[in-house]
Length: 407
Image (cartoon, rainbow, N blue to C red):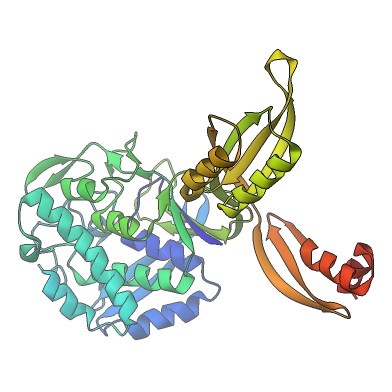
């Protein structure tokens, strides 16, 4: 499984995410050309090398009609990515126009990008619009994007959506989001960080403040995370294949960057439940019959363990492993086909290798091969039922059939 991990230890902004994700690509120049060809003539993307605290990365500059935003306006750590805490401030430049959803749709039609990417862009704007609507008590259809409605903000969002389609991760995981701390001055007055609309977007997402004063997570960055990230938490076990650093312009004691890591989930992880009971009054035949019925009910595995029980009686602990959605059916089957009057339940996380199946042709017939891969290891095994069947039919030993697979 291809995993994209986003480290939001210094927040997130559209331009920083664009630069970081671009660094993951094997052919950056080819993608930058694709960006240039897709964008209207008035927009120019420029990926520049950047260094923060000795770390080399990239910064994505966006030029509109040949002009780039000033450092103060573009620096997301000053107030937000355009120098203000919210989306309802006065314009500061010819490409910072007030726009509603219909205006965004019209401008988006100027981009030569797939329809699925356009839908992603509009979905990100809808997240922002819903947050603005809740904060200001205005219907979504009446919301007007100010700074976030500018062409450079649209260019950032479109670029990230194109990059996510280009990378196509199976799963996106992000760290808890550092929002910054303190207050920020807006046309509406002095407001706390994160700004109200940004805070609304971040509802349901783990966030924290810190010693850094200023707004680290912008509305654009928050909305992009909200839309694309599947879960939040520590970096999972992955085999990292590529790392990207997207740099902001402002300098801090900590490296001002978004770091992304792309890799394979060498060992998969899922949740399983163990249902168990103790038995001391069933025959071996009856227990075997019950185990067959439990497997038919959807258990992944069933096994027994010899135990000593009260009054020094020898007994058997019957255990069944199953997924969450099969718990009820498996428990019911255990209660029906055994003498127990109660079933214990335990929840476990388990690590598993990625598995795939293939067919191998041998002189004696077809055998299914299970290949398990991940975390630097690979294991291949012929399915026993096939090996056993062919051994019986051909009058051979199990080893003779297994050796024929490798010839």
